[in-house]
Structure formats: C-alpha cells, structure tokens
Length: 253
Length: 297
Image (cartoon, rainbow over all chains, first blue to last red):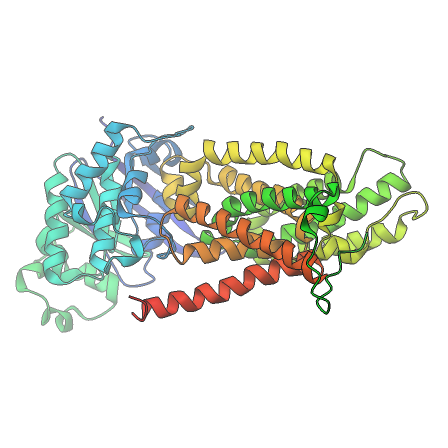
C-alpha cells in the first residue's frame, strides 16, 4: 500500500453556510501516531466527521489509502468520545466488541469462531477481558472507553481514529490507554483528537494544531505558532505552564 | 354482539365453557396471542431505540388508510381493498417517509412524525365522511381507535399469521445488524451496514405490527402493547433476546387476563387489556425500586 492511510487535501467543511474547516491539508502516514490538538469549536470533531463521511466536504478531498471515504471506511476503527449511543442499551461488553469485527458490506448473519477469537484478543489487549459479560451501563468511564477501544481494535483496522480517548480518565488509566495504542502502532496508523496537551506531547510521534486552519509538526512538539493559532494567547503567558522542551523554536519550511 | 354480563349479585359464575365455544371469542383470544408475540419482539426494538413516538405516528397514520379503504370500497367500488389493507398501505407509507434520508435532511424527525400523525387522522375522518354508508358497513370511530377484538374475522387471523411469520423471519435474518444499528448508528455505518435501509426496515416492521395489533386494541392503544411489556421487561434484563422473551410472556399473560376481565366485568376489551398491562407495569416498577434499594434481598 503506497498511498498514505489518510490524505486530506485543501479540505473545506462545515455545516450549512458556516465554515468550520478551511483549506486543511494534512496526511496520516503509515505507522503514524498523530495527535490533533486545538480549542473547543476549532473543528476537531468536524474533521473526524469528514473523515468518517458523516459530513461531505464543501471542497477539497479526503482519500483513505487512495480510495474514496466510502470505500476506505472499512480500514478505519473509530473510538468515539462518549459513544453515540444510549448507555442504558441492554448489551454486554463482549457483544459491543464483537460488533467491531463485522467489517465489510453485505449481509452478516452470525459471528464466526475467528471473529469471536478476535473480540476476546482485543479485550485482552486493553485489559477489559474481565468485564466481558458486564452490561455496558455498569461500566465506569474508563472501562467504557477501553471497551470502545477494544471494539475498534477487534476489526483489525489499518487506521485508528480516537476522539478524546482519555478525557474522562485518571492519569494511570491514560498511560494504560497510550500503552495499548503504542503496542499496536507498528501495525496501525493512529490519529487522536484531544485537548489534553500535557499527556499528548510525551506519547505521540507528531502533533497538529487545528483551529479552522491546521499546522502540522513532524515532531511531538507544541510550537509557539500552534499556540498562537489555537489559542490566540501570547506565547509567553502560556510558556509558564508548559514544560520547557515543548516550546522549541520552530523553523518554517 | 354484547359482552357477557356477569351477575355478581346472585353469584352466578360466568359460563366460560360456553363463552369459549363461540367462534368470535376464540378469534379474539388467538388475535391477542399473535399480537403479544409480535409486540414483544418489535416493541423491544421500539423501546431500546427510543422510537415510541415514531410508532405513535405510524399507528395514527393507519386511520387514514382505514378511512380510505371504506371510501374505496363504497364509492370507488374496489371491493377487495379492505380496511386492513388500507391501514397497511398508509402505515408502510408513513414508515418509508420517516425513514427517508431526503426528508430527515430537511426536517427534524419528530416534526415529520407530527405531520404524518395528524394528516393520517384527518384523512381518515375525511374519507369516512365521504364514504357511502349504505354500501359498506363502517366500524365506529370508537371501535377503530380503541379496538374491538370481537370484530376479528378468521380471514384477518390467517392474514395475521402469515405476516407474523414474515416479520419473525426478517427479525431473525437481520438480528445482528438490527442490534448494531439500534445500538450505534455511526459504528454501524463504519462497519458497512446500510443504516438507512436497516432503519427503514425497522420502521416497516413497526408499521406492520401496528396494523395487526390495532385489530386487537385499536389504533390509539397500539402504543401500549408495543411499549409497556418491553419497557417492563427491560427493567429486569440486560439482554435483548431475554427482553423479547420476557415481553412476549408478560404481554401474553396480561392481555389474556385483560380479555378475561373484559368479559367478566363487561368492559371494552381494548381498555381492559391496556389497563391490566399498565397496572402490572406500575407494580413491577415498585418491585424494581424496592429491590434496587435492597428491601427485597
């Protein structure tokens, strides 16, 4: 596969007449671990929706392994922030994770032994196997998050998209999630969206800042111009709260 | 065609042997059993997917179809177009409209439902007023809206049987994908499920259910059979199949009990069935709440 997992070119997207993303060009590379940071309302969720084909681009294009979004979706495992579902839905963790193995168009009446095996492995990878027969409504925030991660991994995707994967987790659990992600990173390209700047810079390979427009940096550094774009604050003010190394000088190319 | 009158004063017991030998009464029991099975299964989806209002819209739209059928039979002289068929055409039509992405793109779903709901009712009233009442026997509004199980013919029953087998086969065939779509539409889309198709299929199944069940309890009270047993079952189980089974059993027992009350106390069966189910719903709500607080363990 020579095409990059995700290739976004000059993407403009939004809702109705409002433009949320303007002229965004960026790639997710093979074995990438890219974090997209940015303020609330900066377009992080809109970008994910566009990649998932939930909203059509106003202009520009998104390719997944060189194919259209519709065709490429099968390569993607998606971990939503809280879930687009009713937490009281009567279903066990195992059944949710099994859903991740469905994969592909067409009629799929039953799960094969192989699919069940994959679901079990995915639960083990993220340390949720003990909760396999627990009902979703009985899970804590962190357990639910891991169940959703297991669902995304169970389909053995080539790309993982994660929306605020650690938002409701305590620090230990955050490390646990990032460890799980790093372990699969040699087979899977990962794109996460977060505003948890502190954790991100020590865990990922690259960082992009998105606030209507995008700045991508090829190292896990948050640069002053990202801060300027993202938060419109004088960099000096922010520098106090941020570890020194993350504010390295940024050469424009 | 009156109901049997119980004589409490002189303690005469209702002669159930005699009553159950009447063909129409037998049909009434069979229809109730079939309706319970159907509502237990489809109602579970209605409850977990929170589409009670969709079902309400579809159920009420059927009134237009019933009216149109009377009009077609008496004025247009299309004698084969009976009320159940008319109800089915309107119900499935409403289901297709609610499921259409072209419409949901422009209108909020509950607005669409509200429009279908009232237009269906108004069309029913209009068509029934245009119907030539000397040419066709029109059921009363009361009987159409609130049910009259005594009017279920053997032909209706056979039709119900065929359709129930079809509905059950569809649910069995699409069980897993229905589970995924009712749980998480976005994930369903990503895994390659045609969400529009599955949603529309579910709405059509709801529509067919409404058409059969209105024979038993009437249009207005369909929602009761569709909602209450499944809601009650979902308080006690976290497994979709178990909820279906529990809903079927409770709906079966309680609606038959409701029928018995109706005959024994000479009250309209539709209302009797609904109130019996509702009473047990309240009781189980109380039991559940006591249990959650640890009083029963």
